Image (cartoon, rainbow, N blue to C red; front, side, top):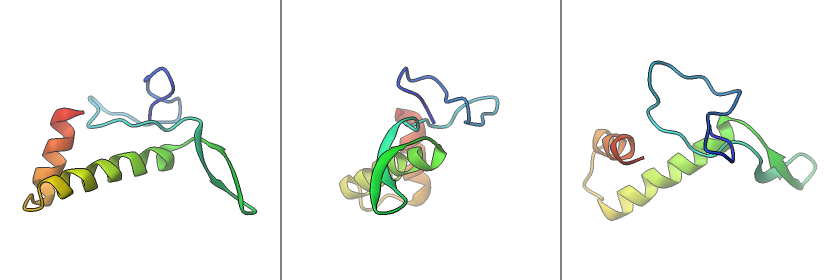
Length: 76
């Protein structure tokens, strides 16, 4: 997950390189008790990447899972 400066968020894990990164700090989302608020976490970043995968599949419906993954990793 990244912060507003597009740097790795303090809570994100990383290895020798990063496959893909997405916003994960101060994301406006649903919170407990039927409310909305700002949340941090890799769980906040995941929907951005999932949405990207969906957009790729909508443009290239014949792509395999591996092709979608490769497209994301080589263009982000």
